[in-house]
Length: 117
Image 1 (cartoon, rainbow, N blue to C red):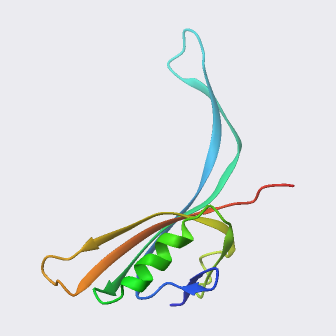
Image 2 (image 1 turned 60 degrees about the vertical axis):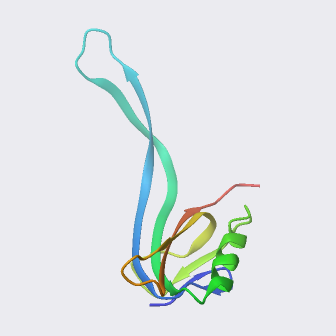
Image 3 (image 1 turned 30 degrees about the vertical axis):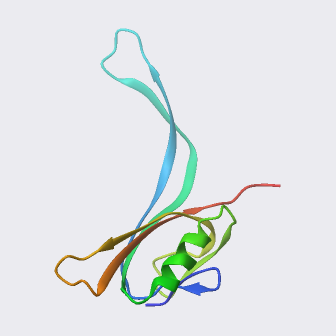
């Protein structure tokens, strides 16, 4: 499955978790066990992507860290269930595997950005 953020293809993607969270207004109702809740909009798509690279691929680690610069880029995926959109890349994290020292797992958060001008 091809997954891109800007012009960079994310290698060996294992999972894509995604949600399109709502924004709610919530107010307490005096004397009631429930609150008044109303949906006021959506926050946009939030994805968590995990994958694997080899320990010799430190250049990709630097590239991924550099993409978390606050600049919106196009997110795209070959999977038709995952939408394409303008997004920010947040929080790249890397985990070295104890059982396989040649393998590094990476995880990134990608959030939709659709700011009106």
